[in-house]
Length: 368
Image (cartoon, rainbow, N blue to C red):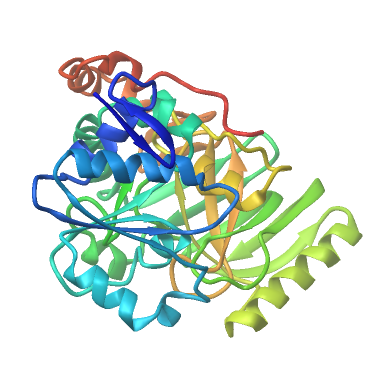
């Protein structure tokens, strides 16, 4: 079957169709008669032909499509009321937009399915990252996150000198339930709920600060020519060591973002790490810090802390490469590998899905 769209001929045998169907059928659960709202952003990491192909496939599946292309909002509290009403009314909303990230932790009235889609280009839709069954990942991630949610102590290191240890606050432990704290599904699945670092201390080897997409404060972030060491305790940054010019640049940037968002700039409030080893980024950290980190943070090769403000998740991400993470008495990440996926119970889950053995294969194409 072939349908001509603005994206060209949409053919069911095309190389991006398995990824599109994985998004629409396995994740968003599109069915005949469903009202499907697409919220799309004109951005360098979102290809219009790819989005139009996803929308046309939705029509082929019997969905009734409403497509919005809209600019970036300043933050979740600034999203236009008419858009909120459309989200409330839709059976399914698919965000190809930074708005989806802004709404991760904001409950939206209505019981429709909401999906934050990372597979917004042809190369991403063609990748194993998008093709590995979402149902497989929903099952495997539930198992992994249930285990992570039981953790009470953790310890993080990396080869550049990161070493942080902390405990999960009692208030957070009491609030943990089910899969995670996010109100929106993600496609592909890639990480777990943030863990508080407000009862932690240690040092971070820092090379980047990138936007966490909670607010638009006019900056993608900064990349440092050489790593610096950041020391913090109980959420507050206590000092830095390294090149003084880079330290001054870092402090200025943290305070600038803090001032723009009316939050304390010199804070580290939480962290989480990628769990999907098939994560693939078409962009490098030189192409675009925003585009790179938006996708690459789902890889086990990247753990990121959240900076600026006490409220989780914070305004900035602080990536750490190839982390080793111990949780209670168990190593969960080792040098960028998410070890639970190597256990027999996870392997058996993968084997129950078509081509599932490839889902846990390590992909090093994450843009660095």
